[in-house]
Image 1 (cartoon, rainbow, N blue to C red):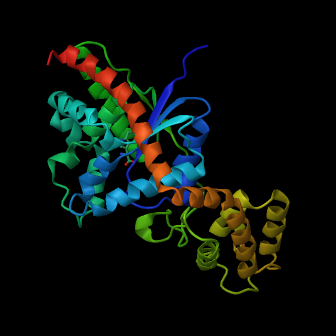
Image 2 (image 1 turned 90 degrees about the horizontal axis):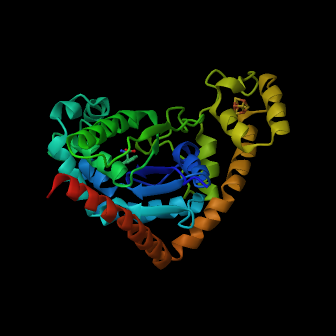
Length: 328
Ligand code: TRP
Ligand code: SF4
């Protein structure tokens, strides 16, 4: 049997996870567990690059994020789940990689420029923020990952990682494989206000939302903007509620709703009620598992610490090779 390919990815613990995260990254990761040797970690140092002024919330988000991960089906039985800052070797590797990384590679990183512009309220003119991709490269090559499942915004970072790995191998000796980005499809659903679902837009449905909260949020969702009155026919193709139906409602009912919307036989209030009910039901297993782990903080801590132990074993081996290559 061929050894499984290794994939690795990380998420910054900046808040609770929502349906967009589930349908995008997370469900993909859960599937990958069956096929790959998976490493998934919570990137708390990366969260610190932009939230260094108020680090207090990061700690709580780490636990919450691990609970979210476990509730959707990531499991320590199939994957190595850990917290970035538990592996101090990563800081050492990042430092060493910083010696060989030309600053212009970092300055021309499109994600960097984009973030500085978007987060204009934060002072991101720090060394650490510029060096974000170096730390990310250390995360990835430490485990000699072959694939990195990410969204398009992260592709430049994987590209810089490849360049850094290549440069290391060229300058010293061949230690690191060059990882490929594995593009995660972006979800077909939008937030309550029809913008991209995002914590910062305050338009998200969270995995931790109660059934009542979900129903209320669905009630607020913007539907077909052209459908002003109940008697107006609607267009499901432009309606975000309908996109949710396609994911959570049985196909027969979806077909009926499609027709009834176009003929104004069904109103948006009723249509949303059906969707909310199905969504609440679909998320029930996640909600139950979540409650299980929320009640067992010690178990969550244990999973985090065992994941860290496993990751560190790999990291220690890599660092032996790295130190030998650099002769320090
Ligand atoms: N930068 C990634 C993000 O913002 C998180 C991350 C940190 C990551 N290290 C990584 C992703 C390594 C993949 C591999 O989402
Ligand atoms: Fe959207 Fe349903 Fe209203 Fe049609 S009836 S516009 S699908 S919410």
